[in-house]
Image 1 (tube, rainbow, N blue to C red):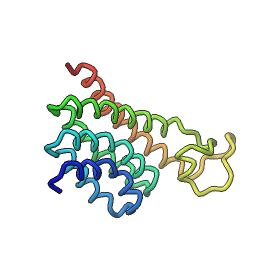
Image 2 (spheres, rainbow, N blue to C red):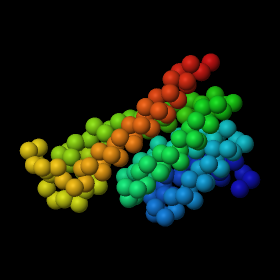
Image 3 (cartoon, helix red, strand yellow):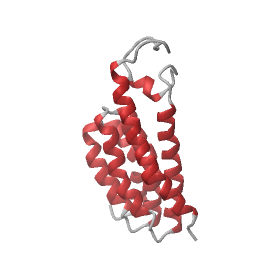
Length: 169
């Protein structure tokens, strides 16, 4: 749309779009988010940037495990590009978004299977929480591998982005 306020509204709702439309629309919404992040209006780019952590959380908590790493791999180049944006508003939004995503990803890694509110716990189909002394379940290995992938993104991308933004003039 040619009117920036319409694009701004779409940027603010990207995370809800993926939740409402389902995981098969994930790639289309990533393309939409990429277009909004390259918009000529800094407010649209800023709002799209702020939507990134909510979008990632919606995909990670609401889709199959094979999408976990895909969403982060799709967002990383965007985040790296945005840190060089000419607008201080967009760079500020990136600092906020990267911090929120960092907190979310670290929370996933620290989530205990015994905690009912844990995102990892909600993804499991078991009725009863496991005993700390019980043998590891089948899914535990893949969840640990998934967390290692998250940790890689945290260590290799989000922390350096935040460090660069802290030195932003």
